[in-house]
Amino acid sequence: MSFSWLLSQPHPSVHSAEDLAQIGANQSFETREEAEEWLGQAWPELEEIGVEAVTLLSNDETVYGPMPLSQG
Image (cartoon, rainbow, N blue to C red):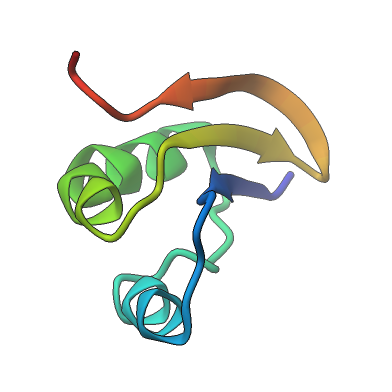
């Protein structure tokens, strides 16, 4: 299986696309645990660059989400 995150960013920009690439937002993970661990580390940066919600995918099928990143 391959796990990845679908990011909801209402106002994407070239700058934010570069930031997303730098933090590895386009990568795939072998396990759900690896994907969730990455999100646990990356969510503050994702929220800072305008990602509002994430959806976990397994082979392009939704596992769960969308899940908001804001704490409010």
